[in-house]
Image 1 (cartoon, helix red, strand yellow):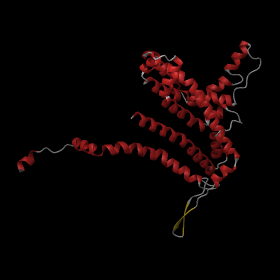
Image 2 (cartoon, helix red, strand yellow):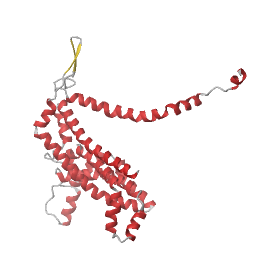
Image 3 (cartoon, rainbow, N blue to C red):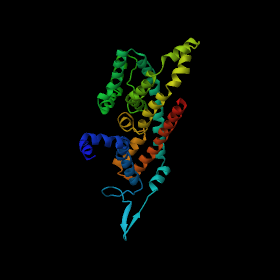
Image 4 (cartoon, rainbow, N blue to C red):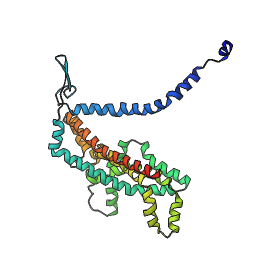
Length: 314
């Protein structure tokens, strides 16, 4: 027996590592994404939440401390007045409603433009499809700020559009397009159009073409086949693309600041003014928390619809 034991080879470092990975690899694979979410989402959220219950002060940092050590005990002071102030001041309600309205209209316009483009890309030949997809992704190779600045030169009174219309004689005076809500819509639709096209393309490209052929063989007209087959099957892509456009558009700051006018009140600009102009970090943090809570609702709704669809497919 002793000779048999001596003949057993010792495990190498690689073999020990492989055994450890087999035993603990699942926990490691699942734990790394959760740690990432904890570090880069939950921790900043908790910091902003803490500041939202503080009081603005002329100090560094410009807010009071929630925890104080008094008489060998910890005293916690929470200020709910910041959230009450958001409800009492109509400025924030107006900013929220304007942001929702502009984001919703921009999402609808983006969907109306992006759906035909995604459908055309999905039905194109392989080589042409690759070129079209590259053209959709190409704007991401340049800076977002440069692309928005380019629209200033296009929509300005002395911009390309007015210069062309004046040259052709269609108009006699330059049109006022910049510093209007129209310019904000143009900027948002142009910026977030790829975020609508790509999820729609991914859904439409996986669609079984034989279903449409079967609908046509059964007597459906092309528009009926589209309404009864293509549109319902592409609903997950529509929802995903709409959320990818709507959620960032609600809190957009750069586009309203550069293309919008002083009357284009959105919550992103309000948040910037509270942080950097008024130096009221607690109010700004309360605005950010309220906006985040509002945006969580459509995300949960989308996940609920997705889970129902997965249950129906199974």
